[in-house]
Amino acid sequence: MEVMSDPKISSRRFKKSPFFDCYHHDDVLYGVYNKRLYPLSCGYDVNSHYEHLITNACMYDVPETPLRFSGPDVVTFMEKIFTRNIRDISPGRAVYAFACNENGGIIMDGVLLHPNEEEYIYVQADGDFINWANAQKGDLDASVEDFNSWVLQIQGPSSLKILEKITGIKASEFSYYSATITSINNAKFYVSRTGWTGEKGFEIYSFDDAFNGEKLWNYLLEAGEEFGLIASDIASMHIRRIQAGILDYGTDFDDSLNPYELGLGNFIDLERSFIGQSALKGKQESPLKIFGLTCDNHTPTYEDKVVNARQEVIGSVSAGAKLPSKYGTNIGIMRIDVPDKVSDDIYLLTPDNKIIDIKLVKLPFKDPEKQIPKSND
Image (cartoon, rainbow, N blue to C red; front, top):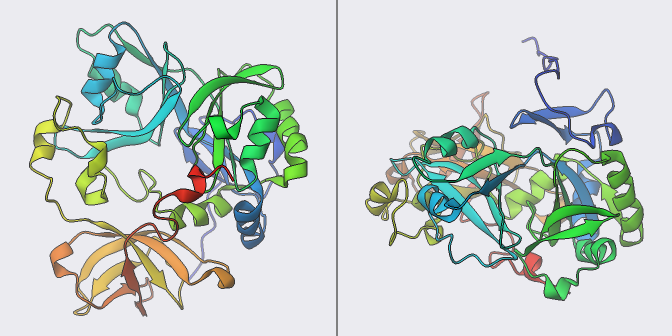
């Protein structure tokens, strides 16, 4: 069978980040996310960069898209579209938040920052959320806008030392899921102590695109050099996010799943009115549909199907990774579409019809209490 290469596409319709020229070369493999190009693979050794992430620190150009919510009725507006209580989010804090459709299916997830009294910034995942959100305003005096902010993540055990050096913020006073505005190299940025790896880390969000990306990139690498900071790509982050059980909207789940099927019931406040509330009241007993899997002799891929002992297809793999051998077996995330047909023995069915032994496990694989990113040590 002839193997087809990935098609080449024009970047004209997609936005290049301000950091694009800092890592671009002809062999970089890009993805598209919110119409933004981002580096899936720059050709780095994945295992060595994963090792560096969990022992030192890595910097990532990521395609998350911050949106600004504002207006006199902004809290009422956000409480209408998000499932959790917004009024109780204190200035200086951030929370995980998602929105559902009328049927209770999740249509977007992300991190909601409340960096000061005046602003709310929602860092959304992939998808056309802004048009849906604006369509829900009705007569409310509020707005949501894409202010062309760009995001860097610095993740790893030494990341908080880098944060202290470049901002003067004391890590001990900037706890997990804190958010603020700070100065970095004489320019203002939003910063949150969050990330997509399950390691200690922080994220930097620009006020707009009127800044020198190459200058910031080089400054951060120079400032972080003494703490082992290197530039990396999504490939190393991908392994760690699977270990941490961090789900990717559009990859691991979509609007066909409700929050209870993902184990996210703690992020729903059914005592108040929001879009999808009525539907979710009837879905509280929904069976969990997202699990982890381990596999000794095969690296799971999105092409693999999940089958039971009778070889009935009951689900599929959404993401997989090959761990460096000293850290354990291969891992993946799978969606079980027919929970009542899960047996004690489940398998992967590969595209070439091989049957592979796997074990179903609950997510996350590592650090279920999230002690690593919360630590100041």
